[in-house]
Length: 256
Image 1 (cartoon, rainbow, N blue to C red):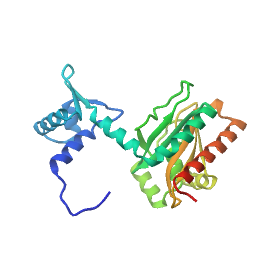
Image 2 (image 1 turned 120 degrees about the vertical axis):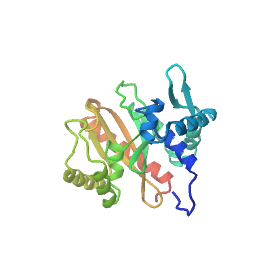
Image 3 (image 1 turned 135 degrees about the vertical axis):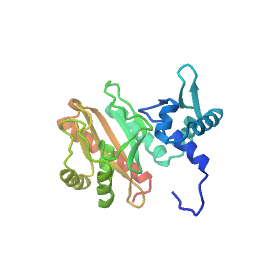
Image 4 (image 1 turned 90 degrees about the vertical axis):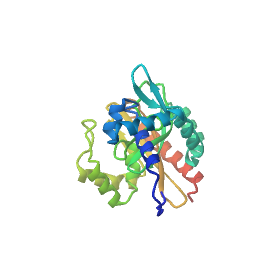
């Protein structure tokens, strides 16, 4: 983001502040909940909500007296997705990998301190953790974020862990910071990461980084599914496939 010596428009920032209150976890909010999140006056919030509603950025449910995002953000999201080069270049390879393996294939990229899912081809296994397109998770939560963290500056990683300490998702989750940092070095050397039952029990994800022309890790590709279907020689085969496809996408993104 650019740094300009210009004062932002306060009303616009407040409107964005309201839009940012909505999330996958809390898609529907009352005006009191929005007040609690934004610390803005009720009259101010009401005027802003009405303005956003008039422009289809917010929908109001009169029967429940609640608000949700309107249809316009969906249109904006479609425009953004359609113009993400990494998405456009990766999708044909992802579709082939999905058809070849039958497992779920996921593409994600870093967004500040988070990983955001861009494309997903789902398997029919019925085991579908909530890594749906558009969702964001802290970088150390899951295979896709961890593979990218392994290629980031040490200062960034240490700062991230201070602000967002490691969390115990399953009995297998590594929450010791020293061990976690040591493992990042190993992951970078290997060129891939296997998350077996660490984020979701019974669920394995194998991730590899995607690089640009500057050899920067700009995105991550993962293949995921039931752990019992990704063991032994099958796992070795899938690790090779994910790394190979990630390498092909990297070449499409300019890596030489």
